Image 1 (cartoon, protein in one colour):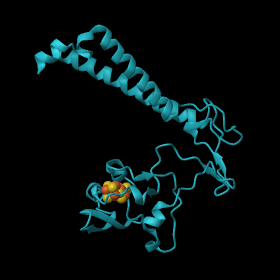
Image 2 (cartoon, rainbow, N blue to C red):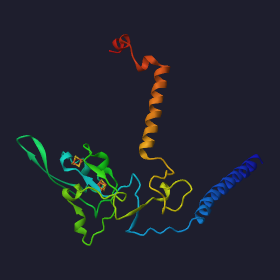
Image 3 (tube, rainbow, N blue to C red):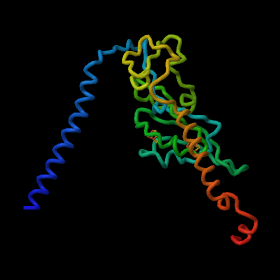
Image 4 (cartoon, rainbow, N blue to C red):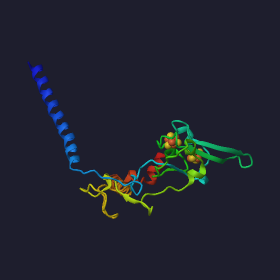
Length: 222
Ligand code: SF4
Ligand code: SF4
């Protein structure tokens, strides 16, 4: 009897939580019903890509040390690093560097692991071409600075929904300096730095010996 009642209780709890999840999902759906369709008149209007958008890779030839880390971390060993060994200096000399964007999956591994930060992902997404071979970018093409939606005078830049001011659904007519709903990455980083500094100060105040070991402590440790 007790087991049966427990089963009924569990079943009721699950049914209530399922109804809650259903309600939450439908609340989002009904919220979207209030929205009207928004047309972006591309290419005269463009949405501003998010800060962490992974677009065409930018490469800085002078910073590359031809270590080939980018090739090893790439899931398809895509970057081609063409180098020769300079016997006089006993150092690698980079001759050419290329990435084929017809094959690249824009995972960002090469950018993440490059030891000299000579690779970076840009917000450039217009890579369509008539010939797939023209998607194989050499170091000159990779070194071209990316186009920016916000600095192009021929384009009216529109904010994506997530970057509009709170409660605003329509990006047309939103002034460039209108505060956005979320925080900028640098604001998030500043908050993290502040909280980390506050934690360090608290730790120092609670345990000054650990933060500032005396000469006797150091002698004992050595
Ligand atoms: S990881 Fe960076 S430095 Fe090394 S070869 Fe690739 S691009 Fe050059
Ligand atoms: S973004 Fe990913 S797939 Fe493209 S070259 Fe870099 S590691 Fe390879």
